[in-house]
Image (cartoon, rainbow, N blue to C red; front, side, top):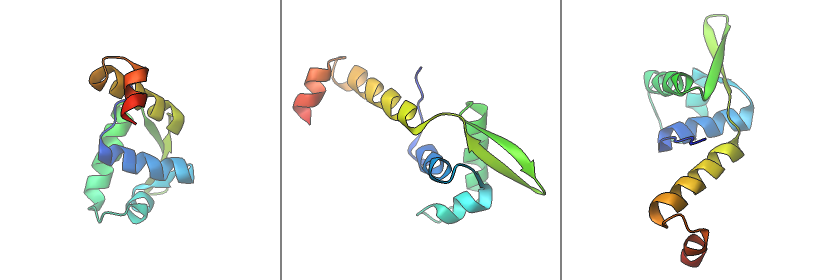
Length: 97
């Protein structure tokens, strides 16, 4: 399964993986970059549309949970990198490293 994520999506997922779950405000506070609340909310909604996170209502807030494991995303990214930049050859990738 190809789990393509943008850099910003990975940043948000890192927070969810580290914490297990988080609200928009908690994700925003944990990010290194100072993003607007609405930006973080948009990223989480996109991740939910992609099937990468889910949410539960928690009072007036939503608590988001990761649906994919960090290792799944790493493996998918490595397969994609190998396929696209190294002609599908793990040997070429290792030579470059």
